[in-house]
Length: 285
Image 1 (tube, rainbow, N blue to C red):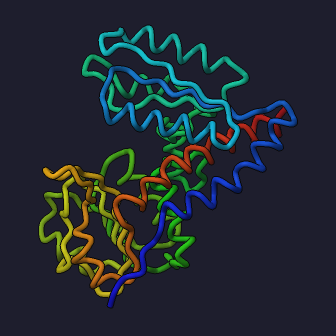
Image 2 (cartoon, rainbow, N blue to C red):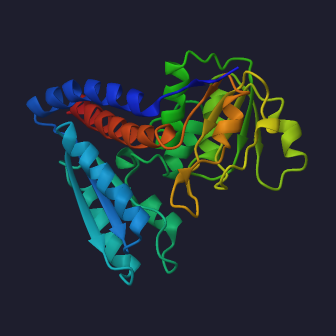
Image 3 (cartoon, helix red, strand yellow):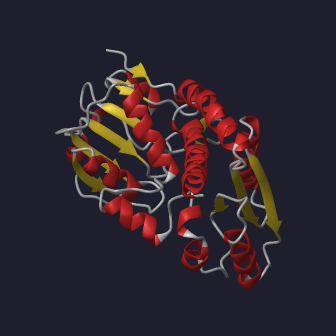
């Protein structure tokens, strides 16, 4: 068996083409979707992510801007900027690129973003709405994974799903979305006892643990859908995921590659959330 590859890059492009018409319709009504990304410090990976987010917005006709601060900036300055953006009617989405420097209270910064502009879905109100099964903004990476299930014709109801990773950004919201879709969900981490015993039961396996090639073929149930959220750089400079792709492809039914899998979907769903925020505001106007 060779697994069917779920092509996140192709799906992302298809979705973005559909977004253009929604952006044009909103712009014609005076509600051009606007996203501001705040970057603190000069982490190279964060700079790449931010550039891709801004360029993604501009490519479909949205307004987007990047606000940068030195790593030594005090938290009060950033909070004041967030308050200013909360009050700006032309900005529909605010995103603070994580991680922040050590002297920041990350939770306080995320909570400062107005819940109706929290297009990352990290505000406590939005996390609570997701937990209740009535999400307003879904964190972008898990949202992208759900779209990939949809595209791949994956029926989640009644399936055994295992998520490796418990972060607030991916693991926890991914588990909630799978629960809401009717799956039976187990959340594991790198220290889970008999991890392979759990993963070999999984019809759906989502790896978000941050360790290169952590999931091996002997951990995968034959025919399972394997979603690789990880992105790791090997000593030779090549990128790989948390899944040993070559080995697992021979066992799985469907699998996502790295790169070209979940990554392109994350930014695409950020665009989707920002457009949705603009549509809600336009409807309320």
